[in-house]
Image (cartoon, rainbow, N blue to C red; front, side):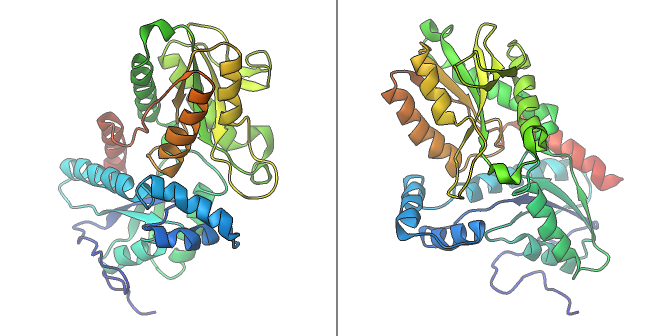
Length: 345
């Protein structure tokens, strides 16, 4: 096997030399870097071609948020902040790099560059905070394939961010701030929605799927930090079965957004349905917390800030949503502490 170089063909990114043998690989879905990559990205993502009308509708969404996926810039800022925090804690330089499943830089490419500079321990951090077949499981599969060509390299996975107290605290703090931006006379008539990306039902393991359980647990914990009651499954809240609470100073529920084009049933209830029902049941505002997301991306900046905001306004209610927490210093520092401990073990 030929030794991979630190600078892969077709890449203009050089991994900084490590002074130890460990590196951090931040894994994610990826996204198109420009408008011309949209069609190839969604084709690879879904494993099939799409009619021109579907491609054009997706292109228009990306054009509305700058002509590319916001993920690259936002995740890059997260990686830079994490790198600075880790290297403040350790004497040796530890490379921190992004690797994506469906776009550049590819997970396998980054692992080969790490290998070329002497890295043998790769610690992974997933940008997807909760376990699912199409995110974290897919990342592991890609990593396992890459390892077959990198003898002596091992990969250590950090706990998913959705289980970290700092992640929950960051989301709760951002949500509390978003609610405070509403007019004071709406404080008692605001419906809170914890949103996460919908998934195909065929990719889930039933009601006890780790993704569903993880989202509900994180929502419960965030609600508790805002002194709201814990959730339960009920059809008495908005006339449809929801996980949430109709008690306390603010009522809340979990909903799922950004349903894809894959045929078949998708995980619900949909965020659109919940927002519409909240308006019909007399709530005057809706506050959305993207509990399923670490970073801002197209699903937050378009699906929430454009589509759901428009729906709320047309339904006659106010809309606010909290920011994703990737830039919250307490979260970055908590993760840096955990990674630093793993590096020195």
